[in-house]
Structures are given as C-alpha cells and as structure tokens.
Length: 114
Image (spheres, rainbow, N blue to C red):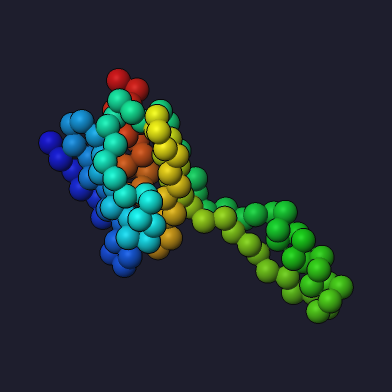
C-alpha cells in the first residue's frame, strides 16, 4: 500500500511511502530528492523548532552594548535528518504540518526496525 504525504505545497515537499521504501520530492533542495529503500535507511530523526540559546544570548549582549537592548530570539528550524548507507539528508520543515511530519517519521521508524 502506498501512502503520500504532502507536507508543503510551495515549494513542494512530498514524501511517498510504499512497501519497499520512500520517495522524497523536495523542491526547495533538489539534493534531498530521491528514492530510498527501507533496508538502506540507518536512522531517521525529527527535530522540532527550538530556540538557539547561544545565539540568542549573544544577540542580547551585543544589542545591550551597541543599540541599548532589544535583542532577538533566534530559533533553529525544524527538520528531518535521514541517514542512509550512502547519504545523510537534512530536510527543512518550514511552513509544514508538524504532526504530519511526526506521523511520517514514526511510520518510517516502524519499517526500519522490523
């Protein structure tokens, strides 16, 4: 059975799962496009969007001395890191349904651990 998940429409980010592997279409980064067998996938990780405290703190300190305060919060974007036998991909999850991404990662983890 084939399942297709469209995470983003512009630029297109689509992940298709079938019985043998996954097919990734990432219009924002062509190097992420391709088909990967479940047997070749070593690991998959989902990282949520979170504050980069080092850069944020540095920004606040610099702004305090230069501009009188008002630094910004800097966040690392959510991403999926897919490690295969031959590649390591980082798929950026800007403007996507994060719950769909969680579902995809869980389905892939289930396939590679069985």
